Structure formats: structure tokens, C-alpha cells
Image (cartoon, rainbow, N blue to C red):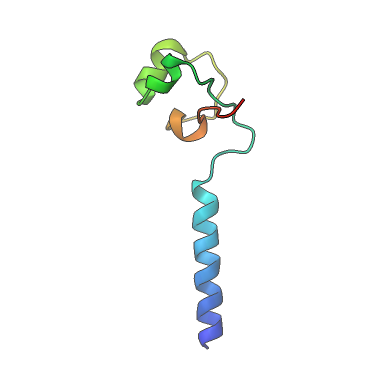
Length: 71
């Protein structure tokens, strides 16, 4: 019985971790000053209009498009 509970707990934790990861092919933001200073979706959309293809209900730009480091 305890093994079943542990297995279920592990599956729940793994599924939660997959839900919060970044999309695999989302482009990175270049490490320039404007992109480093952007902290909200509104700041992103001030430069990037709605003509960029996205999924419906865009959500949080900064969650998917992280700063490109080390290149």
C-alpha cells in the first residue's frame, strides 16, 4: 500500500514539474538593456505588437522567453 502511495506522489510531482517548464522551442530574448529591464507583459507588448504569432491567451511573456545567457 505504501509503495502505491509513493508512486502516486512521484507521478503527481513529475506532472506538476512538466506543467511549469518552458516551452521547448520558444525563442530566447537577446541580453540587451531593453530586454533585461522588461519585467511585465505590458512592457513586452509596448515594443512587440500583437502581430507576433502566439498561442491564444498569450500569458506571461517572461515565463516562456527567457534571457539568452552565455552566447
